[in-house]
Length: 256
Ligand SMILES: NC(=O)c1ccc[n+]([C@@H]2O[C@H](COP(=O)([O-])OP(=O)(O)OC[C@H]3O[C@@H](n4cnc5c(N)ncnc54)[C@H](O)[C@@H]3O)[C@@H](O)[C@H]2O)c1
Image 1 (spheres, helix red, strand yellow):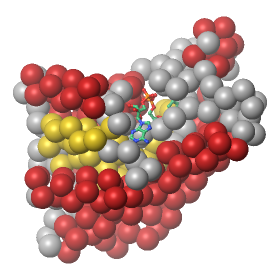
Image 2 (cartoon, protein in one colour):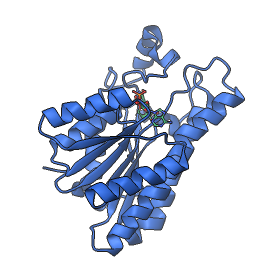
Image 3 (cartoon, helix red, strand yellow):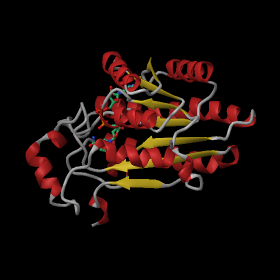
């Protein structure tokens, strides 16, 4: 039981890799998994599945761009479950549906959800973890979902996606540098070609995906559980000396 006694909050937990992570945390014995998202129906369904399988989870509506909602979600998590041990900042939108790769409104949307959303999560999540640590809790682990787009550029994605994911990569390292003394680890995860996001455009196109796969040494797209297991490692005590790291889960795409 790799998540025994841990309270975890997963943003974007209603879909894709967030839902897979929430389910895996619950299977690994988490004390509570808070599934947070804008998609209330889908989020409640993930929680119902987890509970049916004997796990412990609750749903919270959370728009990660809204500071007041973040404060409330973290406060409620601590009040209901006694603390916060693991925060997975996973909610995000794609930049591959934009036609104009320099559209200003899209830039603001991408930076708002993908970068500011993570910043706000760190702001309130780390404050709660610090308080818990000062009161005798073990510390905490923050896992931020970046992408290989936070490491390299692509010719077919809005530049704001790369910028937002690059920001996630470095605020994770800044968090690691600043909060090691509080027993808090901060790492980033960098998936490659995965099942398309709800907001994907060109990266959901089968022709484009087949072309991309030619550059992936493992020769296939990843599966959501393959990322969830990387997140689980960073959430669990198995990674107790890992902070400020970037865990690439891309089938070798960026290795060549
Ligand atoms: N799918 C990929 O190919 C891929 C590759 C690399 C990185 N990523 C990153 O992984 C993360 C998860 O992606 P996914 O593939 O599971 O996508 P997804 O579209 O299936 O899930 C994203 C979730 O985030 C939620 N969300 C969006 N905006 C939100 C907001 N303002 N507040 C709260 N929740 C919000 C959505 O409702 C959705 O449930 C994202 O950060 C994404 O950028 C995805």
